[in-house]
Length: 365
Image (cartoon, rainbow, N blue to C red):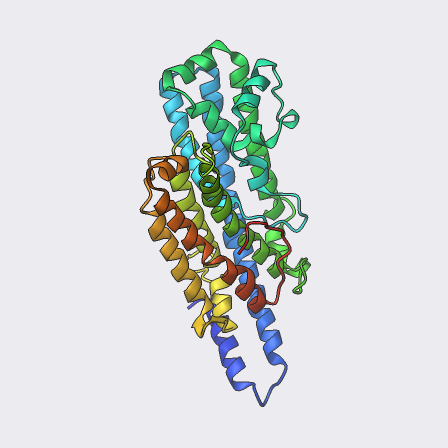
């Protein structure tokens, strides 16, 4: 049994025996438990994810440089395989948790849908520096458009016939590497070392506290799974228009949603490693947070499992808009299952933790 589990048991035992003999100690025990949870998540979830993702994006960048220098169907297929791996891993790194409120990978390298017309205009007019283009013209959606929007023969020919297209591709990839490097350095001992200092530098339950920032970051992240990956495509489809959202050209839409929900659950679980099982689920259990007399952690897990089962009924070889065309009823079931958890996260969990929601969302609960 590891140290974190001992802390949970100690907390529960102290809370039970101290009612009459040691009033006031529960707060200090809760603080110790919260400290251990935040330190574990900081080191073994946030930093660990950024560290792995940094290596993955550097590997993707290498493949992009090779393809851009010598475009071929073989190098394109090799690149696509690495791109898909990186895009799936990106889902583990979209949480918006940064004490300095600067780093937000979802807003900097994954703004979808891409704007194909502007991307083509940029290439034609040799506007190739990423700092000169909009977020919908760079990041993963731009890479995806450039690599998947036509047949393999035509994609390769487009790069062969126009060197600026390769330059644009390389600059977009370099920007992704830079943004991920910045996130890694924020949490790494090589940089700001936020992983070691997140709790100590941000104590308390205000919106500037570590627990509040963490709760807001992952709650907003969950809402964006529901809102932008499922609800928005459904609403746009009702107008008769096509929504070319995340994973549209690569047909990765459903796989990306699956991976993102998996990433959320993993975050709540504290990483899931046998040696580091201290996440928000454990903390909620320790403070006996409940929904209708059932442990809140169990309710959240159950609803996530239901959502995963509904998502599994979609065709993961098709884009989300194709799934909506084929079976909109099932996509609505996915939305309903995801939506059923929102109020628990934004109201019940937030209240149990004693923090406040500090982001705006107009999608409703």
